[in-house]
Length: 92
Image (tube, helix red, strand yellow):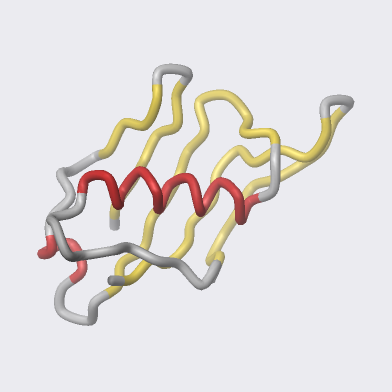
């Protein structure tokens, strides 16, 4: 499982990105923990995470998601909907 912490400075990963992360089935689970709430839709956060991971992938490989959210912690306040954490599946 890849764990990503979303901070004001960007994303912090618990491990490097390599093709081995996706073995043997071609997919893996990503857990995102937001240091401060992410205001927006969970799918938008998942897309942003995939874009970041793609920037770290070897040439010729692309990470995608079908937005299979396994677990999430969300809410809403005066600013709108927010995400505190979520867990979703990605694949290559």
